[in-house]
View 1 (tube, rainbow, N blue to C red):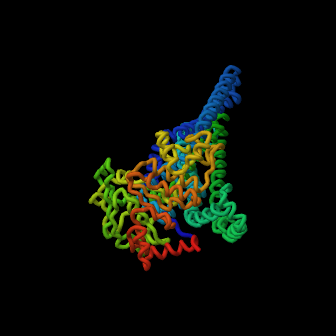
View 2 (view 1 turned 30 degrees about the horizontal axis):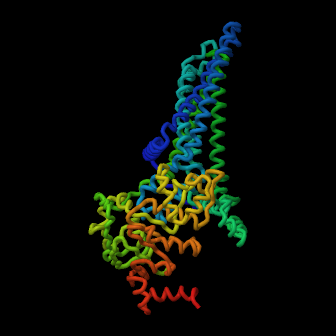
View 3 (view 1 turned 45 degrees about the vertical axis):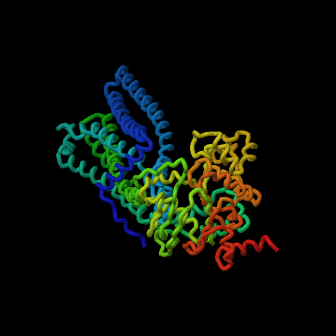
Length: 624
């Protein structure tokens, strides 16, 4: 069953498009100028040629004076040439801006993701909403991409209507002379009113039919989005990704994709889209085109009869027929643009539902104290947390206090709450119960960006950018090169750095340059650790920092860990309990709770404890 579109009022339609235009002008100043100028020239230049041609034909059909004919020919050629050159220049400008405009909306989406609370950013509802926006754009350019088309069509329609009206007025004011006999009936107001009503009716009916066709696409939007998801996932699998390419070959995933594509009929014969195309959309647009042709025939008949009666010369026939039909076409274009805008408004509503997601986390106002002695005291006081939409507590009644300047290891099985603990500490989420205190003050009272500045974190799913190595480490194009080199050396990347011909200026990966360097997982992880060291924050947090490193590189990192951390408070999560031996304290998580806490020796001495069980489970693979 097709879902019936609710429709959007004209007032809301124009308000949404005004807002969208403002937003696009902010990220792309002057983006609409070439479209407006090109539309004006495109719409106005034919009328100049029509008027000049009519004068030329009138002269040819009457006196045929060579000097007058030469003058009209010269003007016609000059105006046509000037309009052609101007259109070519503007079209080039328009094409360049069009290419840029097509990507500028991504700036708005990126800004929104960076501004958004991380909790909302990670919500499945948010990701689904953004996916809908992308699929709508991929389907038929719905959303921001339509703005330049609407701008062009609206300006072209208005300019065309004004130009046509200026050339058509005399059609209704010039009278058929009395000597024309029965043709004088064309002077009667009923004929004039009838022609105007017919033009108005046909002009409105065409866009109405097009609007009906556009409305059908709205009812199919959900099915099309799903179809685009299927195609973008299976039919357009990205080549060149080594991990995906290997799996496809080893497990014949291409056959699975082909099977799925052949069984999901979204765009093929017999699909709802195909049925709508030949039952409603196609006939509606065909009838709209037929009405335009009928109108042209009626106008030709009326104008030719008045010319036959002597109201004007043969040249004016060309002028009036062209002007009236062009007037109708531009009026229809303007009305169909409004109809198209109403259809697009539904998709803009989806976009602004995403862009208007509010920040619910309290941003705080206190400045985080910048202590030269790095004496920060952090306490979890009866903290409980569950992820949005979940009934399961990820953490429950967690109480913990950090010993400043010490090394804390967090261990536990998968799903025990280790990473959630770090996310709460960094205030990516706020707990539903309890408090997290920094120097005795609830962290929610600190300025959010200021509080984030005291943490340097290496997450499991860290990201490096296709940028120079030094810029990746510093997170900035301008940075302290000596400091970046030291951070890389401390993280175990020194030898690899020395082997790079361009050093810190070496581009990572090859998406943006041919001479980029591809990194192994271990190398990328060392750079991520170096990035955390470069930030030089009081808290250094490493979430599985050596997961991609080989045993030798891992041992190197751990042997230097005390030296690397310096006077920072170091917290790291690990599944390899052998890495916890050098830490001052170890917290053991299980099912969202801290069930043990103490030094390696003390926890190992508790033979009935969780830590001892985990230790023995791993140790059996290294001892006989």
